[in-house]
Length: 469
Image (cartoon, rainbow, N blue to C red; front, side, top):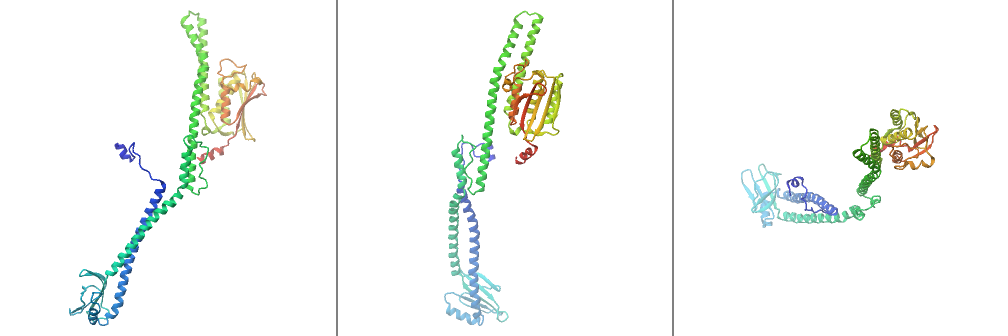
């Protein structure tokens, strides 16, 4: 055992600390509690018994004293005759120092009751001056041997009762503890039967047990299992996304990389004119741009696949659309973008993802549709949806291609060269992540209309989720 283990109080590796069952702990706790209570009650009982027996002895002395105090000196002679076996002792002390006593002489004591030892025997003594001449003190005593014997006998019964009470408490704790911990035992068995591959969606059967703690424990275990299952699902999704990213990257980048390698070999092996070199360098530049664009789009798709509901935050859709429109006009000077949104349009969503979708829609309008005018609109409708739409006056999109272009690496027949074929796939992914859909319609401007139809998630839902967490 290392010093770290000793200081931490944990058992050394390889040593398994013996653990007791909850039923045994309940029985032990019941026995311990009974021991404490019985010990206190036994002490009080024994003390009360001793006091009671001494009170009886004092009462006997008080009754006898009524006769003895009439003629105490005469009583000494009578007691010697009637109680030769020391069943009673009387001692009379006068003011002049004279003394009259039975065979057992009691020592001088203050007025009152006291217990003394005389010649190896214990006496309960009453010393009094009641109804006596000045200076006379009378002491009456009775042996307490029988009283002490009775006390010892009663103590034995008290001790026996205490042992029986503790034993009975432990036994009842064992029996009743078994019933009390039965829901916990059932919960443990349910967990054992579930096994490592059990379905966390199946709740543990402890409802109706009547034990609040067991029900709460089952609820906590189910919550933990749900979290573990969710984490495993997210891990599996991340692994699948990584595999998909690697496979798609290898497939889609093979062609431009091969072309770039060919161009480099031509540059390094052939004697080219300046015009030919410029043409090959332009091809290399286009290939590099295609690789970069494809990797960036794949990265965004992978990031979207790893998104979950916890990433959704309050999002101002109107402000987002306005920013996207101004950026599009800055990147594409020939494009004029108009804004048509509700004054206040706040919902829960992925602001980065929605901005990416609007950016890609405007980029497609300018680059592939040849549009010079576009309208970005966003409105909340009474049916519980928010609709974001991008209309343009470009070439439009054939009806038969409007669904296919949302697939990865699918390009429209009228698309310009140099695209990755992932822009609209990103738009469709963001619509799906928000629980909605993306589709094309004919635009009133003469071109295409890209629509994102998203379920509205109001602000109060965010607040209620925060309160629940």
